[in-house]
Length: 276
Image (cartoon, rainbow, N blue to C red; front, side):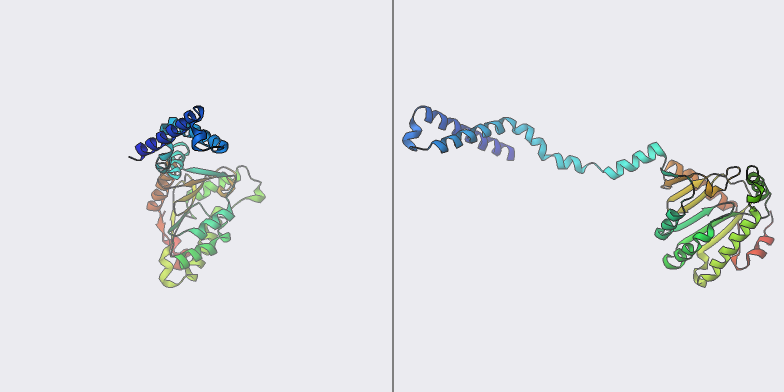
């Protein structure tokens, strides 16, 4: 009805404009409105514009539906879909471990933190944030470390020595023990009823990747010869449901299932009690 009324109104206006033009040619307009040159011109212009609008009304109808069409487009959803399809969830690549960015990620975490490493050389830089996440936001923190007496620890030692100057050698066993000591300190510093949120396991297996996870956000790197994992390229992945996210999460779940729990009340005795 709306469009029909518009067309009828425009048609009447156009007809009126043509009638005015004919009346002017026949001299009738001067009799009706003597000396009205300006109104005549105005009427002629309006009639011309009206006629144009009448001819274009069908095309202008499309503009009424623009909002409806745009509302059907979820730009954010399309972007997420393309990211998952073409990049597998990868959103950024870092040349090395981004300490500042990871600390910021820890500050936003609301559910879970999971770390998979042989050992965590830079744990001293963010262990305070782990404590705050446990106490202030009741976040579950899970840490997977290589068993310090595992044959794999010796293999990793050899891999690091392959390229490094002996003066720069890392001692994997001591590195793991430093991490356990630091995590033990965090455990004892947390209120007793919150200590269950800090869970540490050790594994005796070849890890495929190093992972730092906050909620559904991952930083993933490899164990290269002659280089610590935190010095290697870090792939940043967003989303557990992405191609890369599912693969990394599967590896985390596998190693967590085969890992042995460390009792942080006395981590040294607990390590001695774990049979390889």
